[in-house]
Length: 398
Image 1 (tube, rainbow, N blue to C red):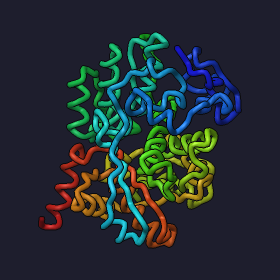
Image 2: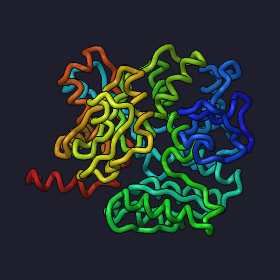
Image 3: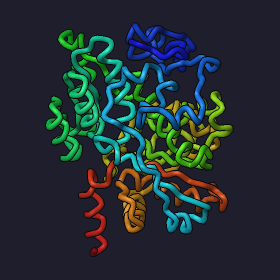
Image 4: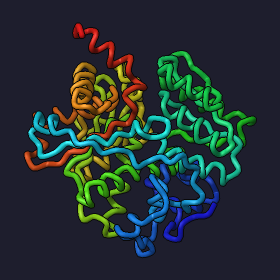
């Protein structure tokens, strides 16, 4: 794999060991910890002007801040998603400005595309024949599309409640799919069982935090936000959170922005989860270092129904290191917030609505100030979750 000059290796977040990317580990071979690309900051020669003049679009524009060369990416021109101003919602929150980072504009309608572009590129470089992952749905579609682009096979293990759109488009892109009776943990069990089979020796895992590259690709979201705000760092970024890929990616990005001098500060990173599946929120409230399994997950926002987040500890680190909060939101509040923003012209998903409702709670609790610039991440295209949003309106008699 053609790595960038600044890459030192893959560092374990638990034991501090560093490993060669060429060895293609899922996790740290010494302790099983999560791996993150480690860089020599002195070798990161990136300027604002050089990014503006890049010949590439989207995620590829930040190739010098990524683990391998831009030409090695498997890309569908992901990234460069809109940052839409929402002045009416800002007035409601009592803040200076609210922007929605609309990740639904990515090629498969999800923020997962950012990390999939890197993770599938790594799988191809390591000689994988097939990529596989458990998913609540959207990442399965993403992995199928990017695997097709890389001429690899793919398989997604999804629970029965996954959306029709995600399941259908996974097949449309040529991906295989195992629909598992039950909920997301049952899909994880089926995936792990398949990966342990000797016939799966040439499969490459794209499970959250199994690959060092999905959370690495996620960091490009904050790069774009800061650039779109004319290199001004927002005061707060609210991430609807399942496993924690998005908020962990933004935490990595904040560190790199400061290391390169592209920015001097970091935003407060806030985690938002449905109140009836909120393991990271519960862990933060209890002062724990990692999330415990949520015993009875029950939310209409299926994309976020992950009771045992693989990145729970890292998400808590991101929140606490930046002065953020972890906030739960009811399904009704999330859906109402989503349609409120839709009335302002922004096609917010139910998943994104969890972040918007959390921002309302942050404002009510005094954690957002009148001069604050707040960014809400919309991880999924609204039309991928239109049935949940429409049902909410019908219950209101609309």
